[in-house]
Length: 108
Image (tube, rainbow, N blue to C red; front, side, top):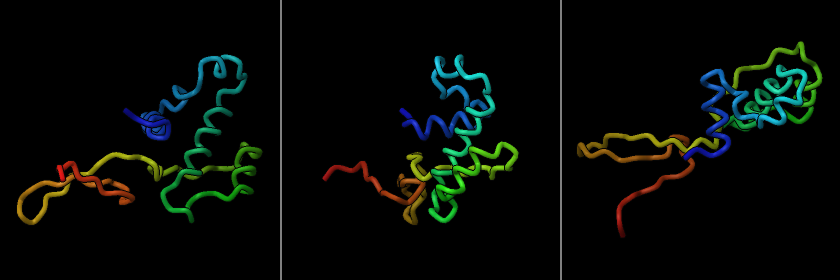
């Protein structure tokens, strides 16, 4: 199961980000492009490296100025997909892709 960030990122990657928006909000909004822009800015705020994240002043500017070009977001820091590495002894071990945690499925 995906969390909200992973779900939004997956939809964004498939060019279907508006599917994350509640249908009631979508139907009451006269400008769908504004919803898309909010999602885009939100994903920029979740960048893995803090130096890549916009400041609050930048966020306000991006939301107010519709002509301002936005950078393409990279995979957010909170995506929990795992990566399998092959160790020197030929065994495979699963690690967190973002390096924030390492989980072992072995018993104690």
